[in-house]
Length: 315
Length: 282
Image (tube, rainbow over all chains, first blue to last red; front, side, top):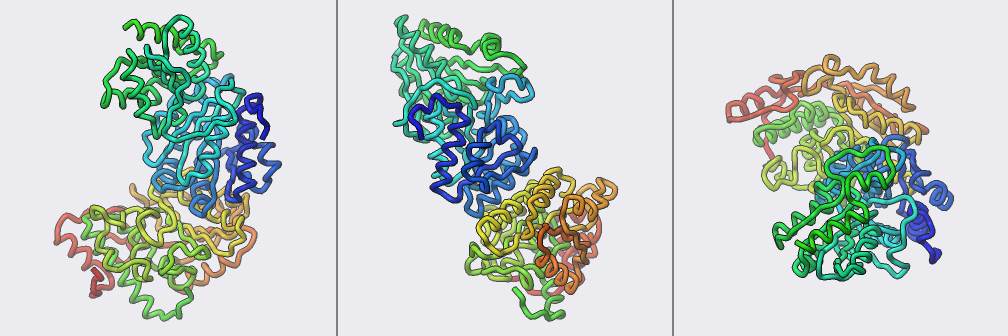
């Protein structure tokens, strides 16, 4: 594996990492529903392991069932599709054949939230973190860069149970490096500060980091917790930070209902009542538009994050 | 597997299955009687004459698998597994009780011998495809059997799985449609016809056989033939009678899920059975 992972698209890192894992473990399989090129597994994984990429055709429900059947026989299937089709379209199949039956299936939702670009509203799912995290037995992950994606995949291959992971397909700014090790249920503190707790995940973490760095130059100390693990969630890190700061701001490439912001509010309401502001998409469907337009429309870009953090700090 | 066939003994066993299943469901207060009774001869034939299994080692890697995709048929499978020795027969008295390992719909995590969880209709055939594909990848020679319902065949996912199995020529997959012609809301031809059923499966690149699902010889001959078919998955359309041999509800839509709220109703169902007088194992 080359050192400059961040120069690659995330989907290429997905395919390369799975190909490496498959070299070492004959049970690793890739399942696709006619989007293998979009997921990056075609050609990278397909070339390396032509007999271990199973295409279910445009039949996501069947793909999940096939994966569950493969898993009960000891295989480790990684199933990918666009986020809405990997989750909400097959919610009952994942609930029963994967989570309830506790089968070792890995589900990867690609192009999460607003990153689906020109596909527009039908393909923009803002609910996957929320709906997947209320499913018993399901682990929910949202890595922010190539190094974290790779570490998450390595962990998923070794973990014997259902996992859902959001995966951005395009290049992502470098946050970590090759030494990064993923720990489920742990947040990563990217900035230390005592004015405001800023909590982010996945696609929004580089933006949150940019906001936190800019705030530092203004004398506003943001304690930035990046949460690749939405479930299990690092309750202790959140509470420890919330106790030290004047308020908590969450930012995610998802609905403000039920996802990262929802999880943070549930935890704080019970264990550490705090002032909270949630940034993301406020109970709206997506639409065909640029990311900049959507950031501005819904108020969760870098400048919005900075302003809300300032507001919280000022009380 | 391959037990010597004694027609009288198998008839007696089928009668005992229906007696025990009906009593289990009546004791539980409600349950899916019709679709369990329609499968008695098929399930006995599978576990006594066709499938390779090892009750002492339910996870034996080389066993034949069975996915009961119409998961509500659990009770007939539980009786078969108990009588084959996968777990004590006394457990049969716990159907649907609090904390039971015998839930109405089959659960691989709770019951020894249950190969896959099912209950939300349409999903089991896809799982069976995955199991059959895994067997082929691993060079294993066992078969994967999958029983689906006729009402269940309304589900779109059944036809996604049909397409996948046909495309991939999963000839170690043998599916059986329990074609009792009834679903919850009425006769399948009135609610949502699945005809022409054989032509549908053939069109999805399956081999199709038909059998009388209550005739020992026909079941055995058809299942045996299905195992020998190469190059295609096999669908066996089993013509059955819902709630077979329980006169009170035989071939009636209300047999799908009966309510039994007192001893009188319980006694009525037991008395309605064609064969009675068995002793209960719990």
